[in-house]
Length: 454
Image (cartoon, rainbow, N blue to C red; front, side):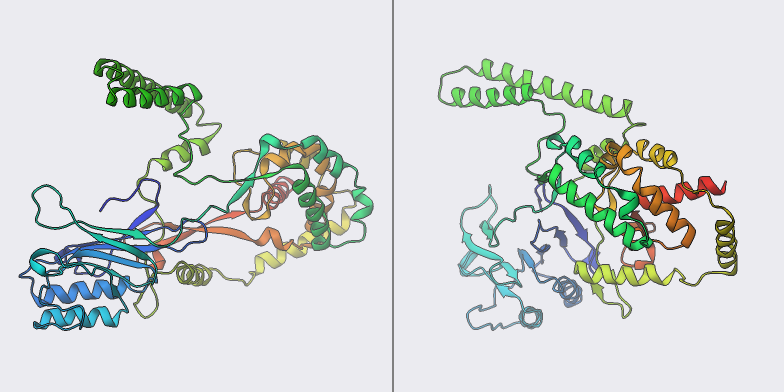
């Protein structure tokens, strides 16, 4: 099985008897609003016994939990009549029963070798496979080729990101700097003050920083691809067309190809050298480049639920992991935490000076790493760093009130959680650990409290 490099896929391990069955399963990640597709290939030797057949049917049952399933292969059941769904042999009738139990459809209609139909295409979702063509062969193989088309239209990416190349930070500063924050936040609680600041911030951000669509992996230009190198590659294509038409010699095309190959190698080497040199200041670019080299995406595979069934859908897997992650945490506060809260409140009553200084907030904002992700709050670290002088006025008010009252805004409690695999058994939810991406301003608040305590 060959999968295009721009498609994200993971190999599926279905059942414990996989070594006996000549099959291979992958799950291809859907783009944008389309769902994932489970694709399998299978070869059944003519003399395969019933025990191995049953092992394959167990795999097929697990794969059929996905609504989008395509299975292709040589099943070697020439006695099956697909018009009447009848068969002479017991093993062939068992295949028909498994197809019916898993609600599958057989898409190949044209007879092949010796008037039989042994190469099958099975699918579960109507419209997923269209225009099945049979004909031709590869080299001396007696099998005919089966060509199918993916019936669903190609999805367009709806993921958007901030376009900093067209950002107007001057207008952004004027919009937030003209707000009398001390009067606007006067008499408000922590949650209300944060909601007011967030409303003005995001409203100004929508006006000053436009959005752009993220290009898919397949449509994205390589990082090392410069305009000059792209022009050379296009020239190579033109010379090739000229050679086919007899307007250029083979030596000319070979020289152009060699020059393009050398230029490509130098561009890749220069990029990798610069990534290694700047890794201390910008680790994200290095991780992005290395992850782009992976042929498959290390997503979460099928998981076993409480009753031992494989869970295939993303929503069900997220719920299963969420239940496990929540089970290892306790919401009850210990006696030391309660005592610390009482001591902190008593200290805050005695101290009348502000505990959170404006200069401290400005310094923390100015030192933010602009290459970090913005988290669930839609506040990018680059934007916060650019506006450090302006938002250093309202944030100390919110931080100080949160510090004095012990109240934390709801947005600071939210996190984008990514499960990280830690052990050997990938089907067990207990072998995953959560990696949380929290609010940037919430982490600044934690750093300020740490500095005050120390």
